[in-house]
Every structure is written in C-alpha cells, then in structure tokens.
Length: 126
Image 1 (cartoon, rainbow, N blue to C red):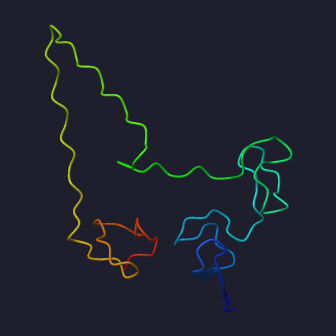
Image 2 (tube, rainbow, N blue to C red; image 1 turned 90 degrees about the vertical axis):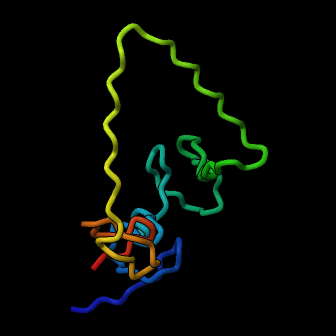
C-alpha cells in the first residue's frame, strides 16, 4: 500500500511518516513529540527554555565555529619531552577512495567507495 510523504518539521524535506530519523537533517524521530534530552519527559510547549521536570536546558548549544571572532583560543599543547626510547612511527591512514563511487544525486558531494548513504545530506547512494 503506498504511503504519502510528510514534511519533516525540522528541515521541511518530504520523508516517510514512519522514518526513525530524517535522512536530510538527521533529526531523530522527527514526527514524535519533542522530549527533554536529560529526563526524556515530553516537552508540552515548544517555547519552553528549561525542562520543568529536571531543570535541564531545552535550548541546543550552538555549534563551535573555528576561527570565529570572540571565540576562546585553545591553549597550545605542551612540548613533548625527549625520551630514551624511540617512538614507533604512527601508521599512515589510508585515504578514502572518492572517485570510484561518483557523486551524490541529492547534493553533488563526492561519495567514498562502498558508501550506501551520502554523509552530507543522507541521500541513498546508487
């Protein structure tokens, strides 16, 4: 039986009503009522800033931006002291093969080989 898609309440993209997470914005349970992240009680009013049950903040923290004005600078790590035993070289990380899988049909980002979903927008590869 065909189902109709519904707009995600967080990003507005059309997804299945039974989706466990929005593949576009990553919202978990987008059609369920909003819950407190600390105590999992239902948030009855979206205007609430603090959970009335546990007092936890309901406002998400802004993501840290690199190099933003006014952002606190991270202290430099302390210089390593020379040791008597030589350290083993770290294994080199293998670069991901990007050209083999092509581009995402949703956002155009390059896909790593063997990817089933786009890591940027969540569109199914293939």
